[in-house]
Amino acid sequence: MAKSAAALATATIDEEAVLDRPEPPPESESDRTEDVDGTARPRVDRITLAAIVFLGVVALAGGVLGVRSWSDWRSTEAAATRDVTILDTATQMATNLVTLRHQSIDDDIKRVADGTTGPFHDQFATSSGGFGDVLNEGQVESTGEVKSAGIVDSTEDHATVLAAVTSTVKNTEAPDGEMRVYRMKMTLDLVDGHWLVSNVEFVA
Image (cartoon, rainbow, N blue to C red; front, side, top):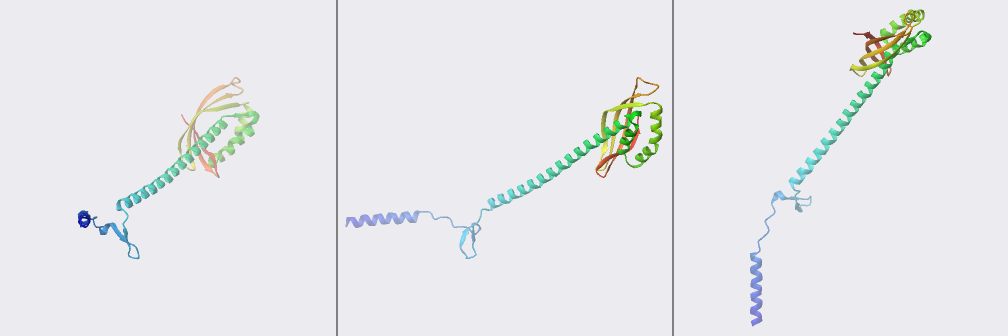
């Protein structure tokens, strides 16, 4: 009889414990979704989903900016390379214009003519014969160099360059040579992939 009373007491305690245990909160409709077969499953956390979408947008924007930065860099690099070519061409042409010797007049004139285009080329070709006669008669030897040069403006197919040039000129009247200083304004055009001089002005 004592054993039955103890068992009854234990059963009563267990039952009270079960009754006193808090029930889990009901799952709200917003936290559940259903599969095609109607089985309920937890809904993906909206905050997590929003974070994933945000990160995707950021990654896409970063990719676009990366492509744009690369394109800008390539454009800048191309412009820098173009300007170096322009300066090299203008420097060589300015040197050729003040390096003329009666001993090599034909080669010197041809070198200048090959680097020119447009009306300037035509004008130079027309007057080169008489110019050669003057050099021969005066036994002229002019040797020059460019001290400095800079681009005033440049585009894909047109440029303007200023150059400071010096030369030493020897002739029958000055056998020891005379130093001369020039300041040239040169116009260049891109013709068939080559930069050529289309005009030269001597400026103060």
